[in-house]
Length: 456
Ligand SMILES: Nc1nc2c(ncn2[C@@H]2O[C@H](COP(=O)(O)OP(=O)(O)OP(=O)(O)O)[C@@H](O)[C@H]2O)c(=O)[nH]1
Ligand SMILES: [Mg+2]
Image 1 (cartoon, rainbow, N blue to C red):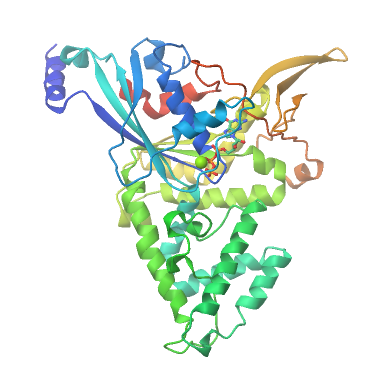
Image 2: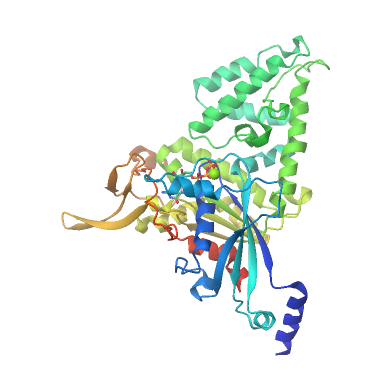
């Protein structure tokens, strides 16, 4: 009893209310907006529905309710939850529109504490949760902090040379052989820089995900600023002191100091927990180049999470993330018998970081889930055999029942791409039934991992 009273006294001084800041990231189209929309929507329905059986506090009927409250951080744009609802409630429901910048939203969850000490203090407590949506592409810039302009240029040019596309060849042929030394004028330089950004956007639309610098394709408020107008350039001769080409390395340095570092200082190091959303299924469908590119991009992204004593991240910032979740999104595109394969495949993808991060006492987990379920799973009988299927409405409005195929449980071997046994179809969200939570697969498990222990 004494121990409980002591703990209660401590809590009394500190107060029961707590605050959790969760970073939600993933490459473009990974499903961040759908995730935050569903996360908030599920919480808003906790007092009226049993929508989250695996969230312990809700299962034990201790969640009294949740509501949106004004965010504390006044400099970050507000997450457009109403915009998401508008799209989802259309007569033909649509997915929320793509987002291009960081945004956040705050929810207050009122609950009954379960621990004896907490109950002594008050019958109610509030957990404030900030969800911050930020592009995974920004994490791809971390390695740039350890390279000077020359080293970065050499690496990028090499990478571009390995891509067998005429537009890449054309850009390389032009950009590396122009005479930028003619005058101090940066017009030509800006022109080639704009073409470089266009090339990166082009590559992105073709499924390449390893795009550096990440801000070039998602510049937010930096669009057209000189700091995002440079490109890799390797020259054998040292350029003249006041030639325009020197602007490239100046802008590169500025990008390191004014763009990459502040991002890690202001956002990354402020997260208590992070979820990295990975869309494994789309690249699996697009083919070998998209899949292996995603794999390299993921490995680069994960460097931001391996903060051992000597890591760059630790030297520059002090991140405080104690939980990290890798989540395979859009699991409603496959039949339930494939969920475990999807999870195993995700585990293989994040393997390079797994051991390393566990040593840093960051708790990690992998799981498959769907933020907004757009299909129903079932079984059809064919020639006396039961075949698992999913059924939904395609983006074009046609009802479709199909078996999308097997998800490989390990990294696909070259033969896999030859047979391409995976058939991925984009479904539109199901019709929204008013006053009910959005249908999901496994959001409760995701939420239990991210905030379950804070609702005790
Ligand atoms: N079936 C299904 N599709 C999903 C789900 N979540 C996202 N999607 C699909 O993935 C697309 C991208 O989802 P978003 O939530 O907009 O992804 P994002 O990461 O916010 O994308 P950007 O803002 O462009 O970076 C959607 O338009 C849907 O087509 C899901 O839970 N189920
Ligand atoms: Mg988005």
